View (tube, rainbow, N blue to C red):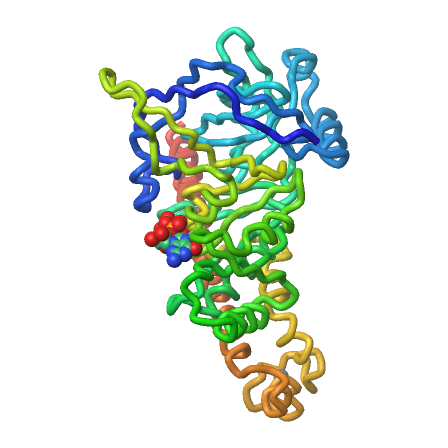
Length: 424
Ligand SMILES: Nc1nc2c(ncn2[C@@H]2O[C@H](COP(=O)(O)OP(=O)(O)OP(=O)(O)O)[C@@H](O)[C@H]2O)c(=O)[nH]1
Ligand SMILES: [Zn+2]
């Protein structure tokens, strides 16, 4: 596969940009993005990828055919002969910068597509594969549909609604980034791992700032704790400062695959993204191009090509991803996978509903007594379960409120209709 390369130059018009797509509080990072933006491309065809280079494979082919079959006849007649697959590289207020075979377009959903986007989670997200109908004349395209996602990172939309907004789609790997400093916090790593498993992406741990670690022994201690926090995950130690460990990390990221960075503020995600992409310019650093008119150029992309032919998703939204429960039956799956060790002991508890408190025959407590299991693991497990239970309760009460409101409205209607009837 040939290396994807960026060609040409993108000129950005000043546009009030809020990458979060909703009018809510933004992070510093998004604030910095507020005035750089995306919509005007002077150089159509500035990128030139093949579908395979974008991550397309046989199973996407199958998904594409299934999607085409699901599309109503009328839509087929209107667009069917002209639509092509493309991948969302940047999203902005329900407009999408997409990469397709040999070009990029600014895509907007058709009325038909819009009608099928019932909740925010149905809207396209960075990393999504979409069907677009390009209009070669002006670099724009109609977005006709979104292919079902393999994986998704979602976060709650701020406010009272419990809708989730997808901030990164179709990532194969989630790099859980944390630094080997006093910030290091195994419990947080566990939470991020649960999040990754829930998304469907495979977690790997990246321990940053290796240059600040005193010696090999200290580094091994960090690695050991990370391995314990995320059992079975690969652990990488890197320094973006001196480049140590970067080759090993890059080698782990398969060509054609998509990785996403997950981690708290300040752990070095942007620096890592820079080091991985080999670029010195990032989202936050728009370079002044034409002082007279105050224009800026930037290479800012949320879907970024890595030199080995893989893709990195770094969206501002990823920085606000929190624990979401979701309503699908596999919610809680993430916890199970993050706490494989705790749960494998729990299988041997005498009682199926054992809470691992004081119950007789509790295999988890036995494992703690024999030193096979760290007490902190059980504490973290309980804490995460409590948080999930809390989130579920909150969602349920929200659902009840919505239902109550609906019922009130309905009874108003019924009463009004009855009054109307009796009048007549
Ligand atoms: N010594 C050292 N410092 C680093 C390294 N990587 C990042 N830093 C520093 O850590 C600080 C935070 O790095 P960022 O890359 O901005 O962290 P971030 O995770 O993107 O933070 P947010 O943008 O707030 O989410 C900066 O001062 C970096 O210079 C490293 O490998 N070694
Ligand atoms: Zn037990």
